[in-house]
Each structure stands twice: as C-alpha cells, then as structure tokens.
Image 1 (cartoon, rainbow, N blue to C red):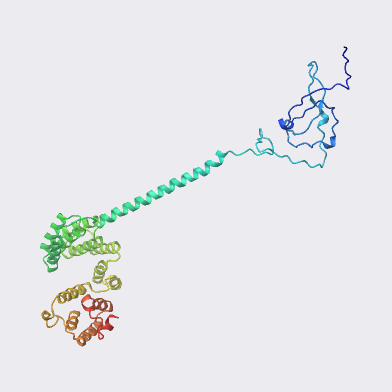
Image 2 (cartoon, one colour):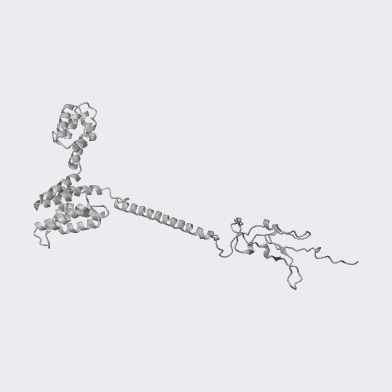
Length: 394
C-alpha cells in the first residue's frame, strides 16, 4: 500500500491559537478551511495604549520559526489596520476587577480604604476625648462648689443647746453698755466654737467698745482673713483710725485719709451694706464735703430694709404676749395709745370703731411699707373680715 503525499493545497493543519481573551472566548482553528476575513467587519482598535491587553481578533499566519520544525502562529502586520481619521472610537468597558498596572496616563489609581477611613476615625476619637474631658471638668466644678458651699454654710456642724442662750446674753450685755463683760463672753464662745461664723468680728466689736484698740484691730484683721463680715470689719478699722486720731496718737499719715480708704474698701466688699456708706457720709460732713455726704446717705437709704426692723421686732413681741393672754388678763391700755398693740386691744374688746380710728392714724403717720407689713401681723389679721376693718387689708 503506497502512501500518496497530499498536495499543499489539500494539507490541513491544526493550530491551537493563543488564548487572547480567556477560556470562554478561545478560538479553535482546524477541520475547516481558513476563510478570508472581511476587513470591514473587524473591530476597531480599543484605544488602550498597550497592545498586550488589546481585545481584537488576529489572523494566524502559517509561518514557522526557522529550524524549529514546529508551526508557530505569528501575528501579521496586516491584522492591525491604521485608524481612519474622524472615526469614532468604540467605548471600552473595563471589567470590575480591572486594576491598572503602573502609572498609565488617564487612569486614576484606586484609593485605599485605610487612607479614607483614618481621618474620620481620628476626628471622632478627638471629639470623644474632648467631650469626656469637658464632662469630667463640669463634674469637678460642681463637686468643688458643693464642698465650698457646705463649708461656708457650716453644713452638718452642731452646737451645744446652750450656745444660742449664751450668745444672746453676750449681745444683751453689749447693748446694755457692759462691753468688758460682753468681750469676755464672745471670746469664750469663739474659743469653744471657732467654726461659727462672725464670732471673731463680735470679739473685735466688743474690744473696740471696751477701749482695747489693739485687740480690736487684731481681731478685725483675723475676721477679714477668714472672709467673715469683711465689709463690717473694714468699717470697724475705719472707726479705730478716728479713735486713734481723737486720742492724739501720732502715726505716719493722716488718720482721716486712712479711715476714708477703709470705708471705701468696705463699700466695695459688700455693695448691699448701708453701714459703711453712713459712716463715710458722717466722716465727709466733718470735712464740709456735704454734696458727697448727701449722695452717700441717699444711697444708704435705698439699701436699708423697707421696714424698720427694730419697730417690727418690738411690735411683734408685744402682740404675741397679748395674744397668749385671756380677755380678763389683758391690760387696760397699751403702752402707746396710737400703736398696733392698742388697735389689737380694741379689736379683742370688739370696739371696732376705736380700732378703725387708731389704724387710720397709723396709716397716715407711717410709711406705706411699714404699715402694710405690720397690719398683716397674724394677731391683727384675724379680724380682716370685719366690715369696718376690711379696707385696711385690701
């Protein structure tokens, strides 16, 4: 059996082309005659600047490497036609997983998630730290304020049951003119209860009235150092300066100027205290500075209690004593015939005409604030529904 050699035209070759676009798009060449390719139907160049990624079909040429003996597909130069001018390029769709290699012109590198997320996380952390620091600061301020208020108000401090009675007795001795005995009592109370406020100032006051100027000045300084009755202690030091001047004590400078300085400092230390203003006004009157003195007295009057505290205390004490008495034990008349106790006696005896006459006189003679404050005392207000007295309570 002889074997006939096929002609070149009848020779069929089987060449496995390169996988240019992936397994799904691999071309199989063989078992069929190679058909000429219509150049007009070829896809246009992709416009991607590197040919290795070009998604175009190529023709296979049957050229073999010299001396290799193996048929190798070679790309023909005819398979890359020149781009026609004014021809629109077909858009290139980039696969989702496409990543550019190198610094290709016209392609932006993908941003790193870490590079995007660090700055917001850092800002959130800074804001959280700042908020926590502010919260702790506010808590600290409140705690410290509460501690200072508790210390100033002497919160939780207990005093003996006899303390108030002894304190009242010392005041009574001071008002009665026995300053030496009052000084002794105040000094003992200060030694026993040093945390009770204003006791140091009271010792200074009693020492000044008893003629012990050195002790008075020392205790006044101590009261200022403890932030107790600062304004009154400064005013007390001003009085001590005038006492030194009247006693002929020789000190450097003018004692009147030092006294004025103390009083002006006292006015600043407590802007609501009328006492330093009254003292300074009196000092200026001795210096013939009447315009300034008048202004100070007017300011002091505005700072005074709208009602006379001494009158309120006296009237309240007298009314309370009468209120506890039975009708048969009431006095025949009050100490002052035109007074609130006298009007109360008339009301208790159901003599409302006399009570009306007394109240009308008081309403004319007293300032309106004082009258309406005292007429509403609980003892008198019991009769507010009486027709003849009703107008006084409206």
